[in-house]
Length: 534
Image 1: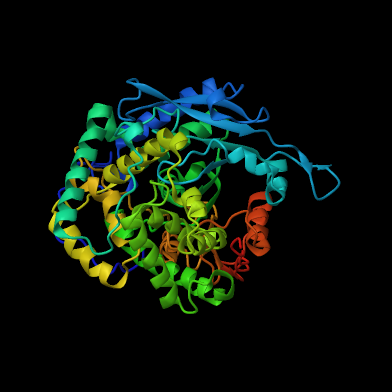
Image 2: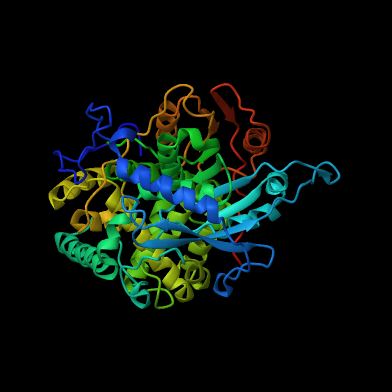
Protein backbone atom coordinates (compact mmCIF):
# COMPACT_ATOMS: atom_id res chain seq x y z
CA UNK A 1 0.00 0.00 0.00
CA UNK A 2 2.81 2.36 -0.82
CA UNK A 3 2.53 5.04 -3.42
CA UNK A 4 5.22 3.28 -5.43
CA UNK A 5 5.02 -0.48 -5.04
CA UNK A 6 8.29 -2.36 -5.27
CA UNK A 7 7.07 -4.72 -7.96
CA UNK A 8 3.95 -4.65 -10.08
CA UNK A 9 1.79 -7.28 -11.75
CA UNK A 10 2.64 -7.82 -15.41
CA UNK A 11 0.09 -7.41 -18.15
CA UNK A 12 -3.41 -6.05 -18.35
CA UNK A 13 -6.21 -8.29 -17.09
CA UNK A 14 -9.67 -8.52 -18.57
CA UNK A 15 -12.33 -6.84 -16.42
CA UNK A 16 -15.70 -8.45 -15.87
CA UNK A 17 -17.83 -5.30 -15.56
CA UNK A 18 -19.04 -3.50 -18.68
CA UNK A 19 -18.76 0.28 -18.70
CA UNK A 20 -22.17 1.94 -18.36
CA UNK A 21 -23.22 4.98 -20.38
CA UNK A 22 -24.67 8.02 -18.59
CA UNK A 23 -28.09 9.35 -19.58
CA UNK A 24 -26.47 12.21 -21.51
CA UNK A 25 -24.95 9.68 -23.88
CA UNK A 26 -21.31 10.54 -23.13
CA UNK A 27 -19.21 7.46 -22.40
CA UNK A 28 -18.47 7.20 -18.70
CA UNK A 29 -14.89 7.25 -17.50
CA UNK A 30 -14.03 3.67 -16.44
CA UNK A 31 -14.04 3.40 -12.68
CA UNK A 32 -15.88 6.71 -12.18
CA UNK A 33 -19.09 6.92 -10.12
CA UNK A 34 -21.09 7.44 -13.32
CA UNK A 35 -19.70 4.20 -14.76
CA UNK A 36 -20.18 2.21 -11.60
CA UNK A 37 -23.60 0.65 -11.66
CA UNK A 38 -26.47 2.90 -12.75
CA UNK A 39 -28.87 0.08 -11.91
CA UNK A 40 -27.15 -0.36 -8.54
CA UNK A 41 -27.51 3.35 -7.75
CA UNK A 42 -31.23 3.11 -8.41
CA UNK A 43 -31.42 -0.06 -6.31
CA UNK A 44 -29.63 1.67 -3.44
CA UNK A 45 -32.14 4.52 -3.52
CA UNK A 46 -35.03 2.03 -3.47
CA UNK A 47 -33.52 0.06 -0.56
CA UNK A 48 -32.70 3.23 1.39
CA UNK A 49 -36.27 4.52 1.02
CA UNK A 50 -37.62 1.23 2.34
CA UNK A 51 -35.19 1.27 5.25
CA UNK A 52 -36.09 4.86 6.14
CA UNK A 53 -39.75 3.90 6.27
CA UNK A 54 -39.12 0.76 8.33
CA UNK A 55 -36.33 1.91 10.65
CA UNK A 56 -34.61 -0.51 13.02
CA UNK A 57 -36.47 -2.17 15.85
CA UNK A 58 -33.78 -2.26 18.53
CA UNK A 59 -34.18 -4.83 21.29
CA UNK A 60 -32.19 -7.43 23.19
CA UNK A 61 -29.07 -8.70 21.44
CA UNK A 62 -28.75 -12.39 20.52
CA UNK A 63 -27.48 -14.42 23.48
CA UNK A 64 -24.68 -15.87 21.40
CA UNK A 65 -23.08 -12.42 21.02
CA UNK A 66 -22.54 -12.15 24.80
CA UNK A 67 -23.20 -8.41 24.77
CA UNK A 68 -24.24 -6.53 27.94
CA UNK A 69 -27.84 -5.46 28.39
CA UNK A 70 -27.01 -1.80 27.75
CA UNK A 71 -26.34 -2.58 24.10
CA UNK A 72 -29.42 -2.99 21.92
CA UNK A 73 -29.49 -4.88 18.63
CA UNK A 74 -31.61 -4.96 15.51
CA UNK A 75 -31.43 -5.70 11.82
CA UNK A 76 -31.61 -3.77 8.57
CA UNK A 77 -32.63 -5.42 5.31
CA UNK A 78 -30.59 -4.86 2.15
CA UNK A 79 -30.70 -6.42 -1.33
CA UNK A 80 -28.15 -9.11 -2.04
CA UNK A 81 -27.86 -7.60 -5.54
CA UNK A 82 -28.51 -3.87 -5.79
CA UNK A 83 -29.19 -4.20 -9.52
CA UNK A 84 -32.28 -6.19 -8.48
CA UNK A 85 -33.58 -4.47 -5.33
CA UNK A 86 -36.77 -6.58 -5.33
CA UNK A 87 -34.83 -9.83 -5.45
CA UNK A 88 -33.22 -11.78 -2.63
CA UNK A 89 -32.82 -9.79 0.60
CA UNK A 90 -30.31 -10.27 3.41
CA UNK A 91 -30.25 -8.89 6.95
CA UNK A 92 -27.37 -7.00 8.57
CA UNK A 93 -27.11 -7.14 12.36
CA UNK A 94 -26.72 -3.73 14.04
CA UNK A 95 -25.83 -2.78 17.64
CA UNK A 96 -26.33 0.54 19.40
CA UNK A 97 -25.80 2.37 22.67
CA UNK A 98 -27.87 5.54 22.82
CA UNK A 99 -26.14 8.86 23.50
CA UNK A 100 -25.94 9.56 27.23
CA UNK A 101 -26.60 13.27 26.74
CA UNK A 102 -24.32 14.17 29.67
CA UNK A 103 -20.86 15.68 29.35
CA UNK A 104 -18.55 13.71 31.69
CA UNK A 105 -16.07 16.60 31.88
CA UNK A 106 -18.56 19.28 32.87
CA UNK A 107 -20.41 17.88 35.86
CA UNK A 108 -22.79 15.84 33.72
CA UNK A 109 -23.92 19.00 31.95
CA UNK A 110 -26.52 18.14 29.27
CA UNK A 111 -25.20 18.06 25.70
CA UNK A 112 -27.29 17.99 22.52
CA UNK A 113 -27.49 14.72 20.60
CA UNK A 114 -25.71 14.82 17.24
CA UNK A 115 -27.14 11.63 15.75
CA UNK A 116 -25.53 8.26 15.15
CA UNK A 117 -21.80 7.62 14.83
CA UNK A 118 -21.43 4.47 12.73
CA UNK A 119 -18.20 2.50 12.92
CA UNK A 120 -16.60 -0.25 10.85
CA UNK A 121 -13.43 -1.95 12.17
CA UNK A 122 -12.08 -3.13 8.83
CA UNK A 123 -10.82 -6.54 7.88
CA UNK A 124 -12.53 -7.16 5.55
CA UNK A 125 -14.36 -9.52 7.88
CA UNK A 126 -14.13 -7.73 11.23
CA UNK A 127 -17.20 -7.58 13.44
CA UNK A 128 -18.35 -4.15 14.57
CA UNK A 129 -21.02 -5.34 17.00
CA UNK A 130 -18.85 -4.68 20.04
CA UNK A 131 -18.00 -1.11 19.05
CA UNK A 132 -20.66 0.56 21.27
CA UNK A 133 -18.82 -0.80 24.33
CA UNK A 134 -16.06 1.69 23.58
CA UNK A 135 -18.24 4.38 25.11
CA UNK A 136 -17.24 2.98 28.51
CA UNK A 137 -13.63 4.12 27.99
CA UNK A 138 -12.67 7.57 29.30
CA UNK A 139 -11.35 8.63 25.89
CA UNK A 140 -14.78 8.03 24.31
CA UNK A 141 -17.19 9.34 26.94
CA UNK A 142 -17.57 12.81 25.44
CA UNK A 143 -18.34 11.31 22.04
CA UNK A 144 -20.73 8.84 23.67
CA UNK A 145 -22.54 11.76 25.27
CA UNK A 146 -23.32 13.37 21.92
CA UNK A 147 -23.67 10.37 19.63
CA UNK A 148 -25.48 7.08 19.53
CA UNK A 149 -22.59 4.65 19.09
CA UNK A 150 -23.54 2.23 16.33
CA UNK A 151 -21.70 -0.89 15.24
CA UNK A 152 -22.73 -3.54 12.75
CA UNK A 153 -21.62 -6.67 10.98
CA UNK A 154 -21.05 -5.99 7.29
CA UNK A 155 -22.51 -8.44 4.79
CA UNK A 156 -20.98 -11.87 5.21
CA UNK A 157 -19.82 -11.25 8.78
CA UNK A 158 -21.25 -12.95 11.86
CA UNK A 159 -25.04 -13.06 11.60
CA UNK A 160 -25.18 -10.83 8.50
CA UNK A 161 -25.71 -13.48 5.80
CA UNK A 162 -22.48 -15.17 6.91
CA UNK A 163 -19.95 -16.56 4.47
CA UNK A 164 -17.98 -19.76 4.93
CA UNK A 165 -15.41 -21.42 2.69
CA UNK A 166 -14.50 -24.52 4.70
CA UNK A 167 -15.56 -26.52 7.72
CA UNK A 168 -14.66 -24.41 10.78
CA UNK A 169 -13.61 -27.61 12.51
CA UNK A 170 -10.73 -27.84 10.03
CA UNK A 171 -9.83 -24.14 10.12
CA UNK A 172 -7.00 -24.20 12.64
CA UNK A 173 -4.33 -26.23 10.91
CA UNK A 174 -1.36 -26.70 13.11
CA UNK A 175 1.34 -26.97 13.90
CA UNK A 176 2.46 -25.78 10.48
CA UNK A 177 5.62 -24.57 8.74
CA UNK A 178 6.19 -20.99 7.55
CA UNK A 179 9.28 -20.94 5.32
CA UNK A 180 10.61 -17.49 4.50
CA UNK A 181 12.10 -18.89 1.27
CA UNK A 182 9.74 -21.74 0.30
CA UNK A 183 10.79 -24.64 -1.88
CA UNK A 184 9.13 -25.39 -5.21
CA UNK A 185 7.40 -28.38 -3.63
CA UNK A 186 5.99 -26.22 -0.85
CA UNK A 187 4.77 -23.64 -3.38
CA UNK A 188 2.96 -26.36 -5.35
CA UNK A 189 1.31 -27.53 -2.15
CA UNK A 190 0.08 -24.01 -1.35
CA UNK A 191 -1.23 -23.55 -4.90
CA UNK A 192 -3.27 -26.73 -4.49
CA UNK A 193 -4.65 -25.48 -1.18
CA UNK A 194 -5.48 -22.04 -2.65
CA UNK A 195 -7.42 -23.64 -5.50
CA UNK A 196 -9.31 -25.86 -3.07
CA UNK A 197 -10.14 -22.90 -0.85
CA UNK A 198 -11.49 -20.82 -3.74
CA UNK A 199 -13.52 -23.81 -4.87
CA UNK A 200 -14.91 -24.24 -1.36
CA UNK A 201 -16.04 -20.60 -1.25
CA UNK A 202 -17.97 -21.09 -4.49
CA UNK A 203 -19.47 -24.41 -3.43
CA UNK A 204 -20.72 -23.07 -0.09
CA UNK A 205 -22.13 -19.77 -1.39
CA UNK A 206 -23.10 -20.41 -4.99
CA UNK A 207 -23.95 -17.45 -7.19
CA UNK A 208 -24.38 -15.21 -4.13
CA UNK A 209 -20.58 -15.13 -3.70
CA UNK A 210 -20.16 -12.45 -6.38
CA UNK A 211 -22.19 -9.93 -4.36
CA UNK A 212 -19.79 -9.72 -1.41
CA UNK A 213 -17.56 -6.80 -2.30
CA UNK A 214 -16.65 -3.26 -1.25
CA UNK A 215 -19.05 -1.42 -3.54
CA UNK A 216 -21.94 -3.31 -1.98
CA UNK A 217 -20.53 -2.59 1.47
CA UNK A 218 -20.69 1.12 0.61
CA UNK A 219 -24.26 0.75 -0.65
CA UNK A 220 -25.21 -1.15 2.50
CA UNK A 221 -23.84 1.75 4.52
CA UNK A 222 -26.23 4.14 2.81
CA UNK A 223 -29.19 1.86 3.57
CA UNK A 224 -28.04 1.68 7.21
CA UNK A 225 -27.86 5.49 7.30
CA UNK A 226 -31.45 5.70 6.12
CA UNK A 227 -32.62 3.00 8.54
CA UNK A 228 -31.10 4.97 11.42
CA UNK A 229 -33.12 8.00 10.39
CA UNK A 230 -30.06 10.06 9.46
CA UNK A 231 -30.27 12.45 6.51
CA UNK A 232 -26.49 12.57 6.43
CA UNK A 233 -23.99 10.01 7.71
CA UNK A 234 -21.40 10.41 10.46
CA UNK A 235 -18.99 7.51 9.99
CA UNK A 236 -15.64 6.30 11.22
CA UNK A 237 -13.83 3.50 9.44
CA UNK A 238 -10.59 1.85 10.47
CA UNK A 239 -8.16 0.11 8.11
CA UNK A 240 -10.22 -1.57 5.36
CA UNK A 241 -13.21 0.39 6.69
CA UNK A 242 -11.52 3.50 5.29
CA UNK A 243 -11.59 2.02 1.80
CA UNK A 244 -15.30 1.43 1.49
CA UNK A 245 -15.85 4.62 3.48
CA UNK A 246 -13.98 6.41 0.69
CA UNK A 247 -16.12 4.59 -1.87
CA UNK A 248 -19.16 5.87 0.01
CA UNK A 249 -17.82 9.42 -0.01
CA UNK A 250 -17.29 9.16 -3.76
CA UNK A 251 -20.67 7.60 -4.54
CA UNK A 252 -22.80 9.56 -2.06
CA UNK A 253 -20.97 12.81 -1.20
CA UNK A 254 -24.21 14.70 -0.48
CA UNK A 255 -25.12 12.06 2.14
CA UNK A 256 -22.00 12.75 4.22
CA UNK A 257 -22.05 14.79 7.43
CA UNK A 258 -18.65 13.89 8.90
CA UNK A 259 -16.23 11.05 8.16
CA UNK A 260 -13.11 9.84 9.94
CA UNK A 261 -10.60 7.61 8.14
CA UNK A 262 -8.36 5.93 10.72
CA UNK A 263 -5.31 4.04 9.35
CA UNK A 264 -6.36 4.47 5.71
CA UNK A 265 -5.42 2.02 3.01
CA UNK A 266 -4.27 3.16 -0.43
CA UNK A 267 -7.42 3.62 -2.58
CA UNK A 268 -5.61 3.96 -5.91
CA UNK A 269 -7.54 1.60 -8.23
CA UNK A 270 -4.26 0.48 -9.78
CA UNK A 271 -3.13 -0.75 -6.34
CA UNK A 272 -6.31 -2.49 -5.12
CA UNK A 273 -5.52 -5.14 -3.88
CA UNK A 274 -2.52 -6.97 -5.36
CA UNK A 275 -0.05 -4.09 -5.28
CA UNK A 276 -1.39 -2.93 -1.92
CA UNK A 277 -0.42 -6.28 -0.46
CA UNK A 278 3.08 -6.10 -1.92
CA UNK A 279 3.53 -2.70 -0.30
CA UNK A 280 2.14 -4.01 2.97
CA UNK A 281 4.68 -6.85 3.06
CA UNK A 282 7.49 -4.36 2.56
CA UNK A 283 6.15 -2.18 5.38
CA UNK A 284 5.87 -5.13 7.77
CA UNK A 285 9.60 -5.67 7.38
CA UNK A 286 10.29 -2.14 8.60
CA UNK A 287 7.97 -2.53 11.57
CA UNK A 288 9.49 -5.91 12.42
CA UNK A 289 12.84 -4.11 12.55
CA UNK A 290 11.31 -1.55 14.97
CA UNK A 291 10.21 -4.36 17.26
CA UNK A 292 13.61 -6.07 17.19
CA UNK A 293 15.33 -2.78 17.92
CA UNK A 294 13.08 -2.28 20.98
CA UNK A 295 13.79 -5.80 22.24
CA UNK A 296 17.53 -5.27 21.76
CA UNK A 297 17.40 -2.07 23.82
CA UNK A 298 15.89 -4.13 26.62
CA UNK A 299 18.32 -7.01 26.46
CA UNK A 300 18.80 -6.69 30.22
CA UNK A 301 15.15 -7.72 30.60
CA UNK A 302 14.68 -10.33 27.89
CA UNK A 303 18.15 -11.67 27.14
CA UNK A 304 17.34 -12.08 23.44
CA UNK A 305 20.31 -10.10 22.15
CA UNK A 306 21.73 -6.61 22.33
CA UNK A 307 21.32 -5.84 18.62
CA UNK A 308 18.40 -6.32 16.22
CA UNK A 309 20.45 -8.95 14.40
CA UNK A 310 20.94 -10.93 17.60
CA UNK A 311 17.22 -10.72 18.34
CA UNK A 312 16.55 -12.06 14.85
CA UNK A 313 18.85 -15.01 15.54
CA UNK A 314 16.95 -15.72 18.77
CA UNK A 315 13.71 -15.72 16.81
CA UNK A 316 15.23 -18.08 14.22
CA UNK A 317 16.38 -20.45 16.97
CA UNK A 318 12.81 -20.60 18.21
CA UNK A 319 11.54 -21.30 14.67
CA UNK A 320 14.00 -24.17 14.28
CA UNK A 321 13.08 -25.71 17.63
CA UNK A 322 9.36 -25.44 16.91
CA UNK A 323 9.84 -27.06 13.50
CA UNK A 324 11.52 -30.01 15.21
CA UNK A 325 9.12 -30.19 18.16
CA UNK A 326 5.97 -28.02 18.25
CA UNK A 327 5.29 -26.36 21.60
CA UNK A 328 2.31 -27.88 23.34
CA UNK A 329 1.73 -29.97 20.24
CA UNK A 330 0.05 -26.97 18.57
CA UNK A 331 2.59 -24.18 18.03
CA UNK A 332 4.92 -24.53 15.07
CA UNK A 333 6.71 -21.91 12.96
CA UNK A 334 3.48 -20.69 11.34
CA UNK A 335 1.82 -20.12 14.72
CA UNK A 336 4.93 -18.30 15.95
CA UNK A 337 4.83 -16.13 12.83
CA UNK A 338 1.18 -15.28 13.38
CA UNK A 339 1.76 -14.25 16.98
CA UNK A 340 4.67 -11.98 16.14
CA UNK A 341 2.81 -10.51 13.18
CA UNK A 342 0.37 -9.11 15.75
CA UNK A 343 3.30 -7.28 17.34
CA UNK A 344 3.87 -5.45 14.05
CA UNK A 345 0.25 -4.27 14.13
CA UNK A 346 0.11 -3.11 17.75
CA UNK A 347 3.07 -2.21 19.92
CA UNK A 348 1.03 -3.04 23.05
CA UNK A 349 1.94 -6.64 22.17
CA UNK A 350 5.69 -6.02 22.29
CA UNK A 351 6.31 -6.81 25.97
CA UNK A 352 4.10 -9.91 25.88
CA UNK A 353 5.67 -11.39 22.76
CA UNK A 354 9.23 -10.66 23.90
CA UNK A 355 8.50 -12.26 27.26
CA UNK A 356 7.00 -15.36 25.62
CA UNK A 357 9.98 -15.77 23.28
CA UNK A 358 12.45 -15.30 26.12
CA UNK A 359 10.71 -17.87 28.31
CA UNK A 360 10.40 -20.37 25.48
CA UNK A 361 14.12 -20.25 24.73
CA UNK A 362 14.76 -20.81 28.46
CA UNK A 363 12.71 -23.99 28.39
CA UNK A 364 9.36 -22.59 29.55
CA UNK A 365 6.89 -22.79 26.60
CA UNK A 366 3.67 -22.04 28.47
CA UNK A 367 3.49 -18.32 27.60
CA UNK A 368 4.20 -18.98 23.93
CA UNK A 369 1.55 -21.68 23.75
CA UNK A 370 -0.97 -19.37 25.40
CA UNK A 371 -0.20 -16.49 23.01
CA UNK A 372 0.36 -18.36 19.75
CA UNK A 373 -1.75 -21.50 20.09
CA UNK A 374 -5.13 -21.80 18.33
CA UNK A 375 -8.25 -20.84 20.27
CA UNK A 376 -10.52 -23.67 19.22
CA UNK A 377 -13.63 -21.97 20.62
CA UNK A 378 -13.12 -19.13 18.14
CA UNK A 379 -12.75 -21.37 15.08
CA UNK A 380 -16.14 -20.54 13.54
CA UNK A 381 -15.60 -16.78 13.96
CA UNK A 382 -12.05 -16.99 12.59
CA UNK A 383 -13.12 -19.07 9.59
CA UNK A 384 -15.93 -16.63 8.84
CA UNK A 385 -13.54 -13.67 9.03
CA UNK A 386 -11.12 -15.35 6.63
CA UNK A 387 -13.93 -16.19 4.21
CA UNK A 388 -15.19 -12.60 4.12
CA UNK A 389 -11.67 -11.21 3.75
CA UNK A 390 -11.03 -13.50 0.80
CA UNK A 391 -14.35 -12.95 -0.93
CA UNK A 392 -14.23 -9.16 -0.69
CA UNK A 393 -10.63 -8.74 -1.80
CA UNK A 394 -10.95 -11.29 -4.60
CA UNK A 395 -14.23 -9.80 -5.86
CA UNK A 396 -13.08 -6.19 -5.64
CA UNK A 397 -10.51 -6.08 -8.40
CA UNK A 398 -8.47 -8.04 -10.94
CA UNK A 399 -5.63 -10.19 -9.61
CA UNK A 400 -2.85 -11.90 -11.54
CA UNK A 401 -4.08 -15.32 -12.67
CA UNK A 402 -0.62 -16.56 -13.66
CA UNK A 403 1.31 -18.04 -10.70
CA UNK A 404 4.55 -16.97 -12.35
CA UNK A 405 3.66 -13.31 -11.72
CA UNK A 406 3.09 -13.93 -8.01
CA UNK A 407 6.26 -16.02 -7.79
CA UNK A 408 8.42 -13.45 -9.55
CA UNK A 409 7.18 -10.43 -7.61
CA UNK A 410 7.28 -12.05 -4.19
CA UNK A 411 10.57 -13.87 -4.67
CA UNK A 412 12.14 -10.49 -5.38
CA UNK A 413 10.38 -8.87 -2.45
CA UNK A 414 11.29 -11.65 -0.01
CA UNK A 415 14.99 -10.97 -0.60
CA UNK A 416 14.62 -7.65 1.21
CA UNK A 417 11.41 -8.25 3.20
CA UNK A 418 11.33 -11.90 4.27
CA UNK A 419 9.30 -11.50 7.48
CA UNK A 420 5.76 -11.49 6.06
CA UNK A 421 6.03 -11.68 2.27
CA UNK A 422 5.19 -15.34 1.69
CA UNK A 423 2.57 -15.57 4.42
CA UNK A 424 0.85 -12.63 2.74
CA UNK A 425 0.96 -14.52 -0.55
CA UNK A 426 -0.68 -17.61 0.91
CA UNK A 427 -3.42 -15.51 2.51
CA UNK A 428 -4.34 -13.96 -0.85
CA UNK A 429 -3.48 -16.68 -3.37
CA UNK A 430 -7.10 -17.96 -3.70
CA UNK A 431 -7.71 -14.72 -5.63
CA UNK A 432 -5.58 -16.10 -8.48
CA UNK A 433 -8.10 -18.91 -8.95
CA UNK A 434 -11.28 -17.07 -7.97
CA UNK A 435 -14.45 -18.37 -9.68
CA UNK A 436 -16.59 -15.22 -9.38
CA UNK A 437 -16.54 -12.12 -11.64
CA UNK A 438 -14.34 -9.20 -10.57
CA UNK A 439 -15.42 -5.61 -9.97
CA UNK A 440 -13.71 -2.67 -11.61
CA UNK A 441 -12.26 -0.61 -8.70
CA UNK A 442 -13.91 2.77 -8.33
CA UNK A 443 -11.68 5.78 -8.87
CA UNK A 444 -11.97 7.32 -5.40
CA UNK A 445 -11.96 11.06 -5.92
CA UNK A 446 -14.02 14.09 -4.92
CA UNK A 447 -13.93 17.62 -6.32
CA UNK A 448 -13.51 20.73 -4.16
CA UNK A 449 -16.77 21.54 -2.40
CA UNK A 450 -18.38 18.24 -3.36
CA UNK A 451 -17.73 16.59 0.01
CA UNK A 452 -17.80 18.12 3.52
CA UNK A 453 -14.38 18.28 5.19
CA UNK A 454 -13.19 14.87 6.38
CA UNK A 455 -10.54 13.79 8.89
CA UNK A 456 -7.74 11.32 8.11
CA UNK A 457 -5.69 9.84 10.97
CA UNK A 458 -2.48 7.92 10.31
CA UNK A 459 0.57 6.62 12.14
CA UNK A 460 3.77 7.30 10.23
CA UNK A 461 5.15 3.75 10.61
CA UNK A 462 1.92 1.76 10.35
CA UNK A 463 2.75 -1.48 8.54
CA UNK A 464 -0.74 -2.86 7.95
CA UNK A 465 -1.77 0.42 6.29
CA UNK A 466 1.46 2.05 5.09
CA UNK A 467 1.56 5.83 5.43
CA UNK A 468 1.69 6.40 1.68
CA UNK A 469 -1.92 5.22 1.60
CA UNK A 470 -2.92 8.06 3.92
CA UNK A 471 -1.19 10.54 1.64
CA UNK A 472 -3.01 9.08 -1.37
CA UNK A 473 -6.39 9.24 0.40
CA UNK A 474 -5.64 12.84 1.38
CA UNK A 475 -4.86 13.75 -2.23
CA UNK A 476 -8.05 12.16 -3.54
CA UNK A 477 -10.60 13.53 -1.05
CA UNK A 478 -10.75 17.28 -1.64
CA UNK A 479 -10.99 19.25 1.60
CA UNK A 480 -9.71 16.40 3.75
CA UNK A 481 -7.33 17.06 6.65
CA UNK A 482 -4.52 14.66 7.55
CA UNK A 483 -3.36 14.27 11.16
CA UNK A 484 -0.15 12.25 11.46
CA UNK A 485 1.17 10.51 14.56
CA UNK A 486 4.92 10.86 14.09
CA UNK A 487 7.38 8.00 14.63
CA UNK A 488 4.61 5.61 15.68
CA UNK A 489 3.33 2.43 14.12
CA UNK A 490 0.23 1.19 15.91
CA UNK A 491 -2.50 0.30 13.42
CA UNK A 492 -5.42 2.60 14.23
CA UNK A 493 -4.89 5.63 16.46
CA UNK A 494 -8.37 7.09 17.11
CA UNK A 495 -9.43 7.15 20.74
CA UNK A 496 -6.12 5.77 21.99
CA UNK A 497 -3.55 7.13 24.44
CA UNK A 498 -2.39 10.04 22.25
CA UNK A 499 -4.18 13.12 23.62
CA UNK A 500 -3.16 15.23 20.65
CA UNK A 501 -4.81 12.81 18.21
CA UNK A 502 -7.90 12.50 20.41
CA UNK A 503 -8.15 16.28 20.64
CA UNK A 504 -8.39 16.56 16.85
CA UNK A 505 -10.90 13.69 16.75
CA UNK A 506 -13.17 15.27 19.37
CA UNK A 507 -12.92 18.77 17.91
CA UNK A 508 -14.02 17.41 14.54
CA UNK A 509 -16.80 15.08 15.64
CA UNK A 510 -18.19 17.34 18.38
CA UNK A 511 -17.68 20.79 16.83
CA UNK A 512 -16.81 20.25 13.16
CA UNK A 513 -13.43 21.95 13.72
CA UNK A 514 -10.35 20.84 11.78
CA UNK A 515 -6.78 22.09 11.51
CA UNK A 516 -5.62 23.55 8.23
CA UNK A 517 -5.02 20.71 5.76
CA UNK A 518 -2.34 18.90 7.80
CA UNK A 519 -1.27 18.55 11.42
CA UNK A 520 1.21 16.38 13.32
CA UNK A 521 1.17 14.84 16.79
CA UNK A 522 4.21 13.52 18.62
CA UNK A 523 4.25 9.74 18.81
CA UNK A 524 2.98 7.88 21.84
CA UNK A 525 5.44 6.55 24.40
CA UNK A 526 7.00 3.18 23.67
CA UNK A 527 5.71 0.28 25.76
CA UNK A 528 7.47 -0.52 29.01
CA UNK A 529 9.30 -3.86 29.10
CA UNK A 530 7.92 -6.62 31.29
CA UNK A 531 10.40 -8.96 32.90
CA UNK A 532 9.93 -12.70 32.32
CA UNK A 533 9.20 -14.85 35.34
CA UNK A 534 12.25 -16.07 37.22
